[in-house]
Length: 279
Image (tube, rainbow, N blue to C red; front, side):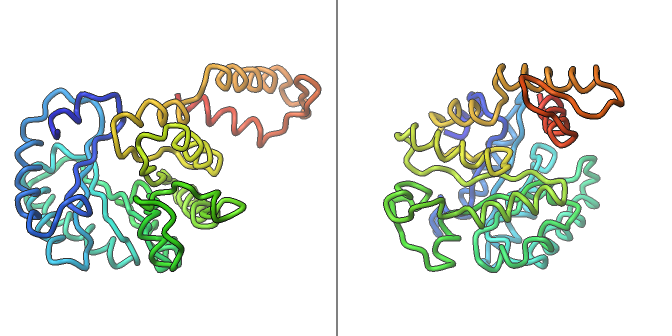
């Protein structure tokens, strides 16, 4: 399965040592990931490894062994249950020492997973570390943290409209997106647990995109096409952005610009430019 993961059309492959691994298999999982990554060649996407959280007896050894053995192969470490700046600082300083020892040329980034009320409370401090490149929404653990109802088997965002008339996670997701963008980071949404429900996934991804998220984790390879479709600009969006930028350029310093009876301001032009820059 690890080998097959690198055959899919995805931006990043994340190898997990946390929630998907039972306690008795933590050491074996770590060894398996190291072995698998040593054999990865010609992969053009990113590679991330999710270690165990800092409040476990596994985290420090996960980081040391992974970073020493295959640090050159990975782009980031996913830090689950990042509750405070100290959690990120611990991981960052540990990586400092390992990279100094190994002579690493490219520092390993941190993807901080916000999964609790405390994480939301301390999110600005968590985002301030130079190693952090993204904030990730951990919906299931966040739900447990705030005492929200378990509304599906996986707890990952299904059947939400059955118990709440609006978007139940709007505040937390908006806070994550706002903080990420304030610190020039990526905002990544939680996975959608029911991997057979592509319409539910599509709706979930569209909501995340509308709130300013840059991508979404996939829990199954069958979800990748839907997620890529939502977070990649459509040709219609690209054409619209180019029309806006062309109109602004043609107007020069005259200020107001109108397209199809709609006024275009500088904020709209910035949105158009950001979309074009993302291609």
